[in-house]
Image (tube, rainbow, N blue to C red; front, side, top):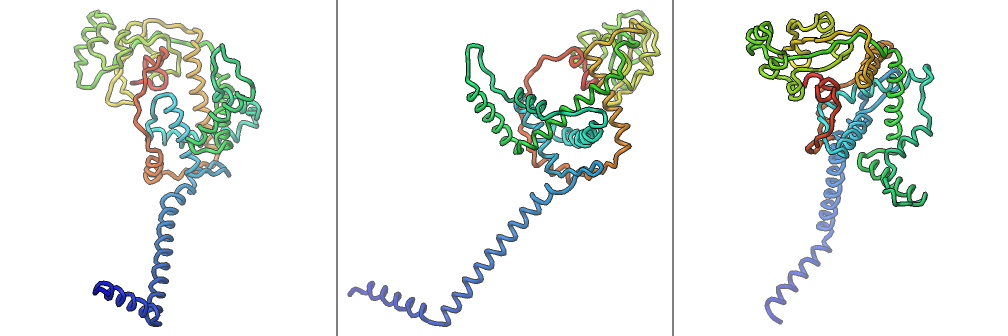
Length: 366
């Protein structure tokens, strides 16, 4: 037998004897138990850390309206719906801005939900189902004739894929959709109080910075230089307003509520006093009107904006009647932001309405 084989046999004999030694067996048993205990403790620590970091925050109440409570997870799901809808439209959401909006929307929608029945406002299951089917129903070419079974199958596939992508149960999506439908019904209900005819002025505006040559601008106006020329020389407004020479068009009260006291006291073809921008200080506005009409029919686009303003005013009043509690701070904001992790997508150019182009609708002071 070779020396190498002898060495192997001797080593095997030693291992065998060691395995039979009661002391060594006992020591190995304790080592194994120790490893198992350590593994269990380590797993518990990891699990506890996961629960504390991810599960516990989701279960914390973020908003309470009366007896109705909503958790962070509810708000996160609402945000994910907005995020997904924006992605489907080829754009993105501004997470920080949208978080604050969603917090207010959650409060407002629950107030509407609780008040609506007393006003005879409701959304039936049939209305809800029709709306959802309209959104997710597959689109076919005019020469296609799919059978009802195929249509239903493809509808369910599209709808379920959407639910999976935002992490929602069907019942949760229906709740958010019902809120949206109730809100629109309430907007129309409250909007009935908005007059269809009102005093209007034909408005022009100019936007400057405090350190701009304001005195020179005023002198040119007083010397008879056309307002549109002055706008193109001095204004810091958005490109569309500058292209139009500062022309906004017919405006009823409530479109620029912060400046109504200036605009509707103006006489035609006179330059207003300076007015600091509410949204973008230190920018300054100068206004001019060219016509007045004490009773002019409000265009549909402006009418819809006034209905939205009426709903917001109604909500501000109603909110005082409810016990509203919100737990919101930088920690909550940061947690929601991290959960969203919005991808940066290039927003495609979309055709805008006249008021959107002028910065009146939604963002008045672009």
